[in-house]
Length: 307
Ligand SMILES: [Zn+2]
Image 1 (cartoon, rainbow, N blue to C red):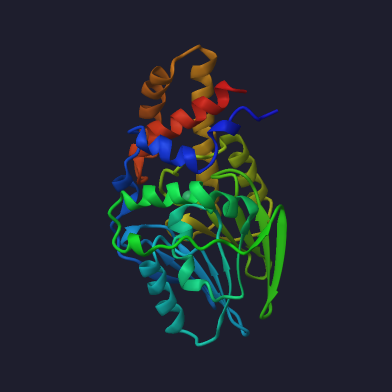
Image 2: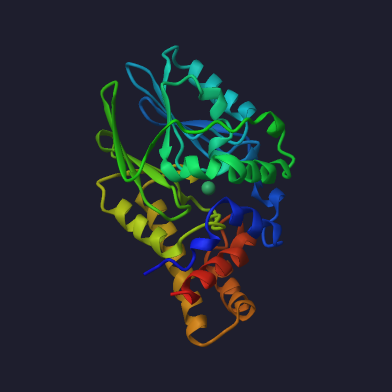
């Protein structure tokens, strides 16, 4: 059974962990200019970005456009819309949020006239009321240009386990898995052998784990690896092939094993961080966000000490 972390979960912890000094708001911010990558014909990903480096993907079908994640502000979402309009005048049919984090949802208002904004039911719950407001308040501490213009715009079609969309000759399978948050989804496009992973995968970046479920995240990546795909579009970082997925699994597995070794020897959190941090730093020295390692070790320590 795994219920012990229930009280830690959700937007509240996102704020609490960050306020605790392990990760500061400005450390979430990236500095690279955004660029639009053509992943396949008709499938584009906007990677990097000023402010926050979350990816947005759009698929241009013969009937209209599907947008996956909306970036961190209406201003950044507006840049995505311009990238779409350079390529097509067709309507935006569906907007999809891979999870609730603001760097994936706070541009939703730019796409509010799409036929639907779709997400897992927990995304809507986490963005509703006081938890959504606290999450937005936290992002407002980061001094991201245009953040004050964000009006939380909720998904208006939600699902629990799985949803399928047939649009303009494409078949999108939206599948829920808990891992990075309690409301992650990934999108499998079989005819393109492509998976849009959301933040279940970061490419060459230590992942944010403030409200993560480590064990279920590892299982989710196992599920992804069983699908017949060749391209993985991560939530942060460049799209790539299977090695991108494998590297993420290895990172989480290394984190889990190293933390559990310390727990089995009765080590404190601080001692665990002191032992595991240098090992991970060495192994992942080419990755970004290495200053998040202590927070990740803490998250794994909490989870596995409750098991
Ligand atoms: Zn995220």
